[in-house]
Image 1: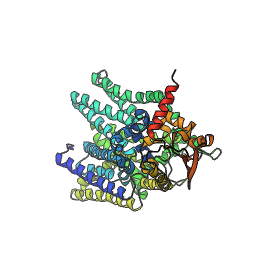
Image 2: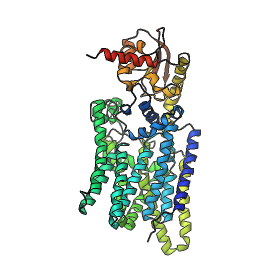
Image 3: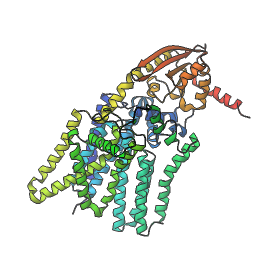
Image 4: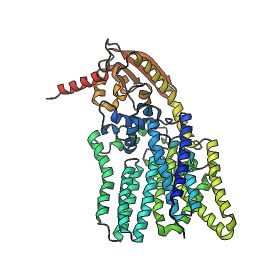
Length: 553
């Protein structure tokens, strides 16, 4: 009989270990200037900042493609300019949810496993260098992993309460389950599938017990159902299309069509081929979880450990933990039909792209490893009880050895981030330095620019978003495109973008003062208005408002 109660001292020790490991990772990432390696991390911070810093502040600045919850969590931190600029605003919520994930994995393992195997599962999860790196960034995967883990934790506890006859506690647990599922819906699109499966399963269990029409379930159901409905309505109201996130100009599908070369074959491996997509995702999962030479062994051990976990924990709700394996079919489908490519350095096209998606399988693999450890230690206890403690220590040493090997060869997700940064960061800094030089003489000058490609240039230039006119400003942006010299003192145009086209169509008053180019990046031209006055942000706002009033009947 396993005592799955966690003492206060045990809980404090787990959390203290997690905090220490997280701080080491943060210090390393800070020292290596890696907080903003991913362009998506810069973009997430940019979206959060423009909610409070733009000509049109408010929730409409959240955009349509990326779901809003990660950005809402960052808003209190991006309000601090320096944290927005250096990436700390994304690090703070990410490391906190990582700590919560670690505690959730340990708590989940202790539902079915003795302390030693649960510690192996916990160590395997907490010492993964790829997730440790990602929890120092503004990326959304750490948050979603946390939501997955706690969904399963509370589902298992709900099922145990129901089975033990504690109806009051089971009803109370419906609320945190509903809230975390709604948060997952607003974090990543995987969350939509997870919420549907989890809540439908709850409904089936309650129906079998004749409790489907309970007030608690009906009220909590409103939260789960409202989450996707709110997002669809938001897209319709703000962008005029309730599926703008799926078929709009910035959707994954639109980007795939825009970047694909006609007649060059499939745009990426696994395109319209679920089997190849499955293989790519499973390989990605292996490569981000363990040293490359141990990938297949990990998969076998995780599957066997999961089977063992089901045998010893099926009466304690272990079946609900299988929800952690959802990323496998989800990404097999998404890579094949959802315009979501994954590139690996070991397979064609021998590149790095979206490797971090494999981290969503880390909780499932960790519990599988814990189950395998439980099988080994249980057998050892039967035949060689004296060796049990040494075997447990050896398993933890192997986890540490895996960490060492992965660090030696550099974690895959970190390498992708470095390559991402090296392709654009020097370019961003050169352009920002030139813009900063111009703004030194005119500190209140307005800059017309597209911030979706290089969002960090604004922060690096030392100005607020309100001092720019960018694509998220809508009517301000359109007015500036129609008469660039009248609305901005400076303009940053990327080759072929709307601003370059606008300046070509309305060149009067605009003078090119600098031109930049960089390998595999669009050329950038910096323009200055030759008008005698400097245009400030307040003047732009007043001009657009006056123009809007003139159009009123």
